[in-house]
Picture (cartoon, rainbow, N blue to C red):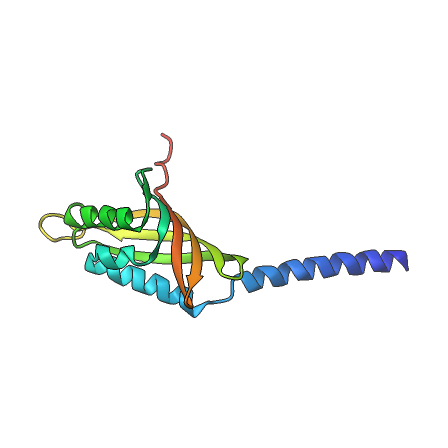
Length: 157
């Protein structure tokens, strides 16, 4: 009888863990909208629109390791990139996992691929990396409170 209770308790714990993971992966249309709208703004080279997807006091760690603080500075960072190396670039974002941290806060990780264009307008080799975002929900829409984009180190030779 005691062994049955232990097995039942373990089975319940495993099942509950599985349900929590499945719940964390539930599709959120508001998150899908954030990804689609952010990607579209990037594709247009619209730094102002991109800035609008961040909180006033957001923190962004850029792929080169720089830290950018606040919506206005993040907008300026994107404007500089779109005037230079990212002019005409496109981006693909794949959401990996999303973990609720509270009723209006979530963390999301995934991958991105930026395809820049050369001076001749032809696509250059893509830059691939990973990201980690902290998002908060405001008025039913997700906005970014923090964003870290990382380019993996090249393999050791």
